[in-house]
Image (cartoon, rainbow, N blue to C red; front, side, top):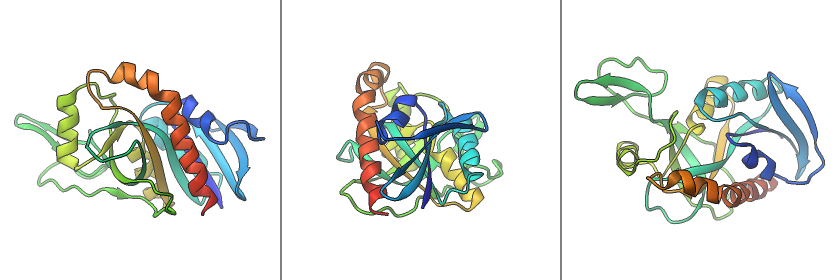
Amino acid sequence: MRIGIITGVQAEAEAFCAGAAAERATTSRFDVRTLTHAGHDIRITCCGIGKVNAAMAAMALATQGVDLLMIIGTAGKLSTLAGDCFNIVDAFQGDYGASRDDGFAHYNAGAWPIGPTTLSPFSAMLLPEIGLPKARIVSGDCFVESAAHAARLRDTFAADLVDMETAALAQAATALGIPWAGIKATTDDANGESGGDFQANLARAARAAAEAAEQVIAKL
């Protein structure tokens, strides 16, 4: 299987199969590290932060004929779901919709943002079991350092995690007809301490997500 992996931060990309023999090439401006893991052809790139970068990287990897698009790395915690590394089962874009006098109306990403609202997530491919808790993630183009905003996202989407890339990868993969999957480890609780917590916990969480992805891919 040919698997395309993206991350938002370079440390997340480098944690996957760290030290393994690999080749590097530039594809559509993205530095792609190519290696073999458990018999699978892996293409991994750090797309940079945000939804546009994630969608661009998904398109770039799709041109290489990948069979699966996967996102790995870090996220903020929204819910009380136990654990610190998760198998993403579905994703919402949390900042798409209509801004109105009575508040923000959320819509499905890409839908006509006028009239009655509907919400349904992008569903991920079922991954082999390695004991990871299953989680829903919501993505948006802002780093969440507000407990109040985190609570709104949690309650609106019944979400467990928040990040800035996953739902965009999911939307791009769905449009391209390519299965997608995600594994995310938490660095912070999406509150006023998140900036410092993210920096302090990035290396640990990046490695946790990478190790989990390595295990999952070995079972595909």
